Each structure stands twice: as C-alpha cells, then as structure tokens.
Amino acid sequence: MTTLFLTCGLQGSGKTTLAKQLETEHSALRLTADEWLHELHPEVSGVALDVLREPVERVQWNVARRTLELGCNVILDWGLWSREERDRYRLAARELGVRVVLCLVEATREELFERLSRRNAAAPHGTFHISEARLDQSIGLFERPTPEEIALFDVEAL
Image 1: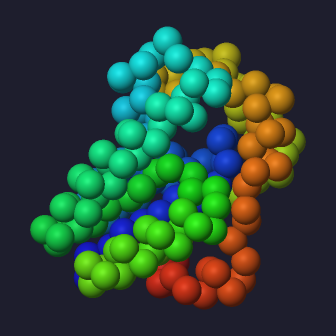
Image 2: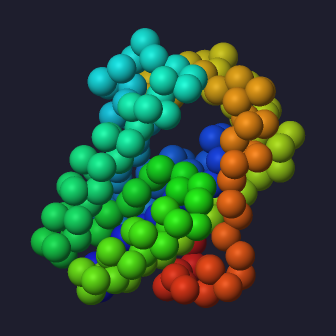
C-alpha cells in the first residue's frame, strides 16, 4: 500500500538519516525542506529560514500529494513539531487512501547539542548552522506526540 512517512523530531535528532534509509528501503520520494532551502538560499540562516520554509513546504506538499496519487511512497522530512501539522498531513493523506506512518526520532538535549555541534563544524551540504540558543528555543516549541496521537497513525517497525 502506498505510504506517507512523516519524520517528527528536533534538529539533530536523526530525521534525515532515517529518511534516507526509508527512501532506499521503500523506494520513496524523500522531500527534505532544508535541502531545498539550502539550494535556494544558501546564505540565509536563523529566523529568516522560518519565513522561507513555509513556501518550500507548500510546494513540497503539492509534489508529495501528486506522487502519492500516482501510487509512490513519500517521506516528508520536515520535523513536524506541532500536533496541528501532523494532523493536517495525516488527514490529507488518508483522504488520498494512503497509509501514514509517523517516524518519531528523539534524543536528549545533550545528544542534540553534541550532534549539532559536530554538524555545524562540518557544515555538510543541505544543512544550516543551529546555535545552542536556537536549539533551546526549538525544544520549547516542540509538541511531542502523545501516545493517543501516535495511535492514530499506522504502525511499522522501523
């Protein structure tokens, strides 16, 4: 059955690493917003990215929806920090008759900071610098899925 995978987690938690694995294992189209943002605006960082992210995700969702209609698997590698976002894409995908799997990727604050520090130093293509203050701000904004919400998604051993 055609599947939409939603990655959920903070910066540095391993979402893109998992998304790349799923891309191969499930012959899925992986849509990673940061990669597109980096291609379009490599010089931008911080709060400016938040303003630019919405149009990129809107275009990626249009691509995802059409891809799902064609019967191909899709991975939205966005983070999906709020319940409202996760509900919106879960319900829209279900209207298309596809399975929806939530891929919650978690790490402690210390692990996140360590990973982001390494990533910031290496500056791999398709990533942006995330400061410690930005990480702490993100932690405050993240709405972790509750067990009740997780139960609304299809289950797959990842």
